[in-house]
Image (cartoon, rainbow over all chains, first blue to last red; front, side, top):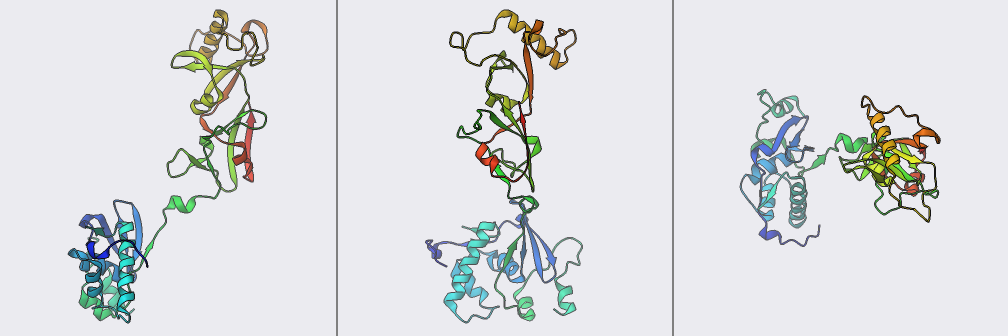
Length: 99
Length: 207
């Protein structure tokens, strides 16, 4: 995914603790985002990303490296691109923050 | 997914708190999927029909007979709380007042004054007109006579249900001065072109 943003300058982190209400549902989670009133279905990997990986501010490359511990990465560049796209999408939804 | 693994992911605390997703649990679960999110549409968004009409703001709210088209907003649904767009539902339904081009008078904050059809639509209420030509070359914008103002005041008071108001009859000519009465529901101006694009049951009342 193309982007005109210098990704190395953006640090991502979790939203405030009370911004999201998590509810376990089947194999995933339902997340109610209080500020927007929106409801999302998320898989376990998403919750791990939001609550664990981003508990400390990190740039996209570091997030991708952390995620490589738990997923199989065949193409590191494609993996990084996918992580960047997901962070931007989560940012649109308010599920992560950029610093 | 094995039952015990499903149980591990369920909330057993009764507090609504879900267990933290640690690396160990993810590795044990063998989860290889990347993060994924599915956003639920709000009920309002799901319920919205495709029969949306926008408020006319370009002066195109008159039909080819010169009538001002006023959509009764109580007959339709505002979109997302906006007052610029309304949902006519499916099949499309709405009540429209087609207000003829006349000299109308009504109660305003400044007393009984002449009002235009756009204001009548925006404010709603009861308005009065007389069956005569709207424009006469020699007195197209004359002020009301004292007698006419008294008549209108009495009519307006009667419609407001004020006790002791004059007992006037509505109709043609006679001692009531020939004033006619119309009632307009508060609404928004819409264009004839937009209305004609809907197939459904748009009720147009000629006023």
